[in-house]
Amino acid sequence: MNIQIITLFPEMFSGVLGSSMLWKAADKGIVEYNFINLRDFGVGPRQQVDDTPYGGGDGMLMMIEPLVAAIEHAKSRSPEARVILPTPRGKVYKQSDAKRLASKDQDIILVCPRYEGYDERVTAWIDEQFCIGGYILTGGELPAMIVIDSVVRLLPGVLGGENSADIESFQDDDISIEYPQYTRPEEFRDMKVPNILLTGHHEKIAQWRADKHQDTQGK
Image (cartoon, rainbow, N blue to C red; front, side, top):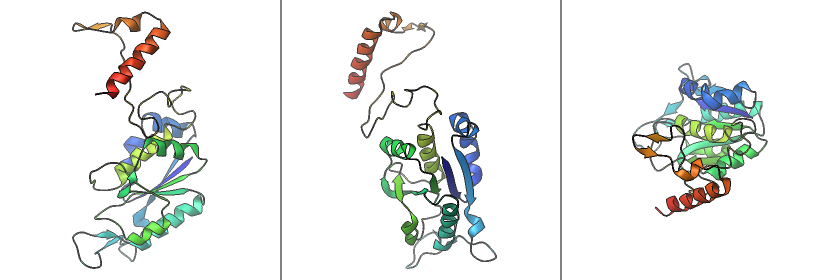
């Protein structure tokens, strides 16, 4: 999978994409990250990318010309890529979206907005708009990182275990909290690991986990 990121701040991604499983996925050749600096497509000698909104209002808007030029440049590299815009006006991003994006044999282009927003006409070049939560951020870079993390970890060969991506929280669109889990030591400051987990009785352990899963759902 090729993931292209259109942003004014490509340096923000280095720590996230250069660490842990996201780095390993790229190192294995499972995914390739490419950055497109929106400033390179700015208008005029100052490479302008923002301007005041028609009708008045606070702040600046990202201009249509640089955005479309950057998207078209990305599409020239990967014509079938899906163009995604993180925006508070988008639909709430869910695990089912991550699974769908990961399961398709299709590249992704992420457009990271900034300032007070963007010229609405750019949405004609956008395939999907996602919102990661009911709050406002200073730009689309952090939401883009979340989308990348949630998708890349689901690609075959990234997590390592065959069932790692299936047996976990947030399956499909329903909130599904995992059962409690423990590791060594067996006792820490008078807090002990439940005895059932030490028995090696897989059937009883599975039932205990199912019961605990139901308990957490009811809270």
